[in-house]
Structures are given as structure tokens and as C-alpha cells.
Length: 88
Image (cartoon, rainbow, N blue to C red; front, side, top):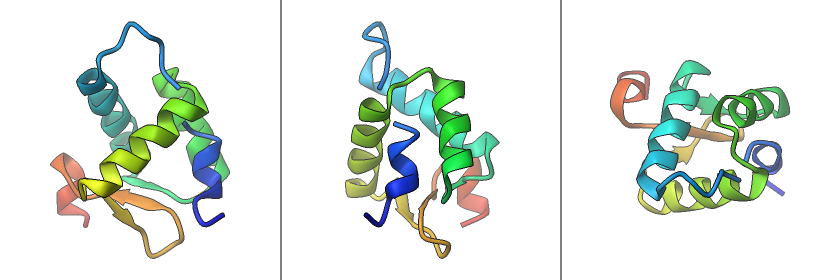
């Protein structure tokens, strides 16, 4: 699977709204350099957000469809919004 490292990142506590989940994920991703392309980074994002793998996977799919995340040159995904836009 092309996004296999992301499988280790991605489910959230039910108390978060979808917008809150998105913001928290994007903040954690920015703290990790805006790119998720390996299992270690995915695990750190999972730990920072407290989201399950399933929730994170759903977030990534949604954000990729909306072009908030794009394929990275290193085989994962990269954010192209907020502070990550400058690095894109």
C-alpha cells in the first residue's frame, strides 16, 4: 500500500468535532515538518493527536480529496496549508 506508514498514524476520541480533529492533525503534522512518509513520524502524530489509526486514515483521505494534503516526493503525504504552505 502506497500510504502504509500512514496506517500507523490514523482514530479520534468521540468528543472532537471534525473541524477540531482536522486542526489538531494539521498542527501535529506541521510540528513534524509537514510530511508523513515513515512509520516513526506517523506514530508521533498518532501520539500527539490521540487519534486512532482509523480516524487518522479517514482524515488523510478527506484532506487529500480536498487538496489540503498532497503526495510528497518521499512517498507519503505533505500538507500545503497554513505554515506548511511556505514549505510546499
